[in-house]
Image 1: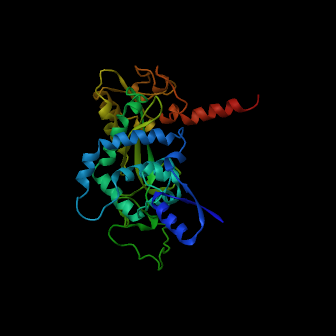
Image 2 (image 1 turned 180 degrees about the vertical axis):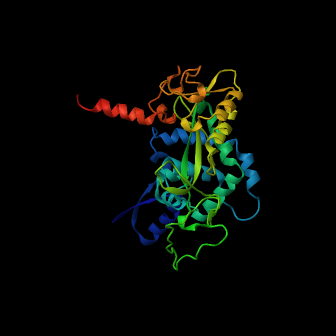
Image 3 (image 1 turned 90 degrees about the vertical axis):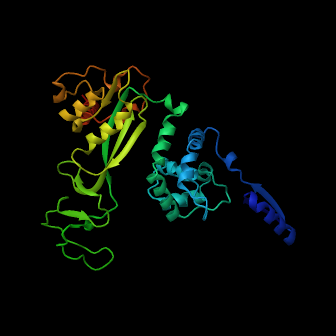
Length: 351
């Protein structure tokens, strides 16, 4: 009888001893993770770029980890795992750790062997917070953008900025009065509470589980949620994100975050344009941009009042004389989406 076993390098010697003891014929098949990943897989190129960027961050990692005590999760593996979480839209660290446990592709990208144990999800979360507190994630993103293979894909002259709501993990039931005048919640793990007829605002109420989360609605007629605002700065050649930040909810958070994100790209010898939607159409924002030598850009059919009804001096980002990409428009802002969709719907109707 022939027994076929797939195993890693550490288990070959043990199984060989077992085979000699039981007198069976064993056919070993060594699983080489490097050979399992196709040479044309996009993660191969990404992993090579990431490894070169991590080599320059080794001094930063040494400052965060102690030389004594029990070994922790290597920061290089942790950052690679965070990239996989973003690439494959894995919503929690626990699901990410579970995916690394049985997925050979994930093990190869992170740097774990087939026999190496996967870390605990709680330890992963604690170490991730340590990297974020040390601003290593920001330096890691900067190192990736400065890589020669990535830098040639980016446009430093035509940028776009936009914000989106990030729903907090705090329940609306935790949004209680600050003075403690609200009644106690019903018994049970998730007790019911009736908010009908109760006026709740950020000035009088706060979440008991996440004090930074604020009540906000995306637009008229939309439901209010406890959330934050995520801001992204994109270049318009390939629609790649070159800057990102999350802030608390406020009426001017988008404009302040936009100025903060575009500041490192301002003050160049060449003209820099910044695309934005109507939420950024304020006199103070346009003035701040022009003081930083950044020209607010827009689509030709859209006229901002702050521009006096005239077009910008520079060509819109979408029409710049640079190599285009099918995904580039996704990086631009959603200017006049309703008019564009209405025109597409009208053109698709039969005559």
